[in-house]
Image (cartoon, rainbow, N blue to C red):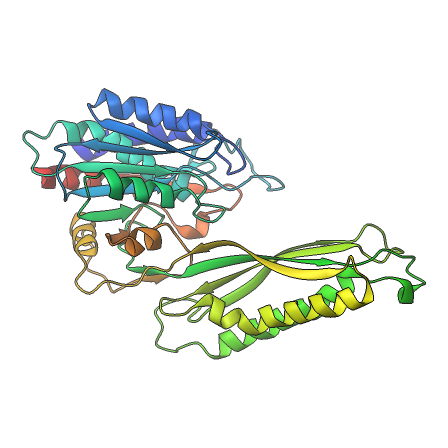
Length: 390
């Protein structure tokens, strides 16, 4: 068995354990963090946790090699999206191997990368007199707004050592990705006044008042699509907006007391989402004032839920150069439309690239899978990284 095959086999075993931890974002990730921390400590790594406010979740930072600035940081999130309502043909929290694929929640997004990093840790530790360290950054709550990474990045900047490059292992088929869109998410709440639906003059239907707001967002989405730069490397090329959730009303014959809807706006680098939304914010404020004249308890408001900055392609970026060398990638500049923690690292001043096993097309799907061939490509990548440490 070659070294790459051996590393790939270790990664598959570790992936089975990682998938077995139900780290859906609504749940704790502490069991997975403890498992990863234990494996890294067994390799002599220095580790520390950065917990959330109530201690139910944690980021993990670890270092193998000298306490020196420079080197590589391998970053990935530990949380996964829910499986509720999806038609899985096998247990989503137990890896099933079928036809050269590893099925399970998070195999592609993105526990496959975490498994490779942990599988390679003994190889990193075995490097004699390493010139620079390899660091690990495992985060929580990426799937619900990249909420965990900011505190990890702040801790890394405060205590060091500062990595020279950051590789975020989102699924890219082991190809270097240089840019991603940013995302901003918002919650709109309309409060009405309940009454019998035959007496519309005595109440305010929050659902009916929400419809014009949603129509405005739909028109804005169409305008953004039309205004997209044809030369943009993204698909879709410009900013995109979608309403993802709507909830309101209690019965068909009651004027709805409340309607809530959530939307996201994804923008390429250089576009300010709040500037795009200023007319919509003004529309909500005008509706709020108008509703209060009809009923004192009625109103409308819009709240920001999360905001993740985009990642812009770097000119001769150190992270991209290294990732391409380790992956054997001579392809074109690539950009993706999903948001990731890479933009947060870049915003903090780190040279950053995205490169990890698996396809984003598998992410969030029932019967999510990772090709074994992708795990092997990732193992080769990690093996070359160990060689580069010397």
